[in-house]
Image (cartoon, rainbow, N blue to C red; front, side):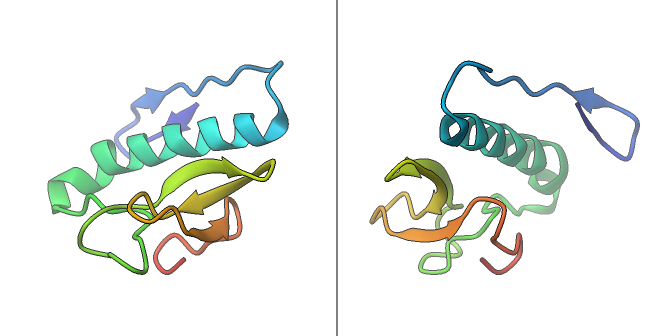
Amino acid sequence: MMRDADGSATGLAVDRYAPVEDRVTSAADQVQEVVIEGQLWELGQTTWPPCPAHPARHPLQAAVVDSLAFWVCPADRSVVATIGEADAHNP
């Protein structure tokens, strides 16, 4: 469960039988959606975590690359950081 400052909560779900990299990627994707829609949307910030190459265009995307969970640029598919190791404001 992810809890917001207002007390609301959102559940996260992953397939416990999926490979760990798929579970991490799925969880990161869900967290990203909750953060953008629940916290940043009203502030006009819809690019979290921001893509360092295109910070005003799109957020990074959670993806499995070579059996590891990464944040990647959705435009050019470049690997930016391992999920869990990127600074949320400056990957």
